Length: 335
Ligand code: ISE
Image 1 (cartoon, helix red, strand yellow):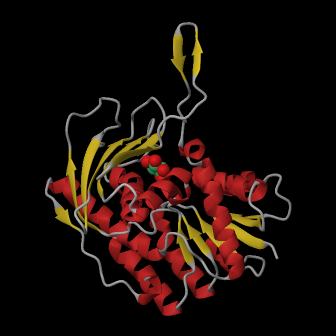
Image 2 (cartoon, rainbow, N blue to C red; image 1 turned 135 degrees about the horizontal axis):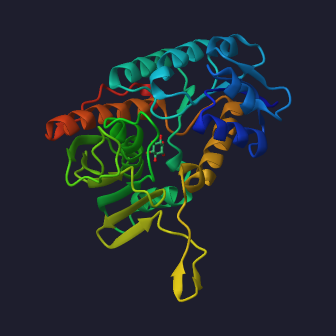
Image 3 (cartoon, rainbow, N blue to C red; image 1 turned 90 degrees about the horizontal axis):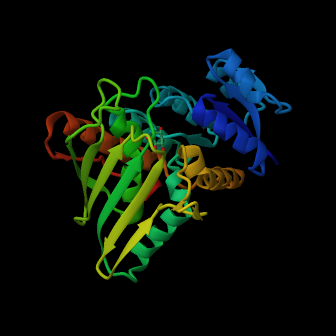
């Protein structure tokens, strides 16, 4: 049977997922698109036979023609929709962040734990990037000895209107918080943020770039250069230092062209291109798991743990201090 998905939010990410579900994912179809902007909802279903455009998430939740929910609204709208969708007990793919703060994410964890089965997968798509999976396997396999340090570069060409200084942590570095937890299979214990020399190309209110320093339970040190007005393109890369080797992922890929006395290639313009294959794998894995009634992938616990890291990160940004990350006890559903 085909999984009939309602996509909530037809903005940049929602629109991309709608095309993905319609053209590339097997075993699923777009049944409904919800957006408060009716014209945008209508535009998003153009050419998708059988899909309906709605302006209220409740209508999708009430519809007998909807089997699953893909939530791609801004993060502050996730909490209420998630609680209602858990009540309906249907598979949910929720874009990151799960919710904007640890307390509201914890409410989601508790609601799902009470339900007693995993219904939420969080959209940390990097886990589905082939090189991310390979680096995690290298850490787990131990062939290069222990992992000691992680160096992350996270660069965006520019930011959308309304992107605040806190969003450098909450919307951007949230991915590194999850990636570090994914690579190490450990929780993060502290976050520090250093604000140095800033570019003049950032909008007012944003200090860009920022240097984020992170520690994990076993003492792995990680740093992130988050630089969101870097102009040149979209780049996400990591270098990992092990006891007997160095591993780099996310570096430029070909084709490399040499012509007219120069060599070079292309930089991906945005996350849709950089992580397109990862998004496809992510959504296909979610659809396949939903068909079997058992969700895997990044969980509500991962959403909660990263929300706690973000909270610490925003405090660290404000105070300049190293801020400890404190987590509630992990419910058995997630162990
Ligand atoms: C955006 O929301 C994303 O999730 C992208 O992956 C990230 O690179 C960007 O900084 C965020 O704003």
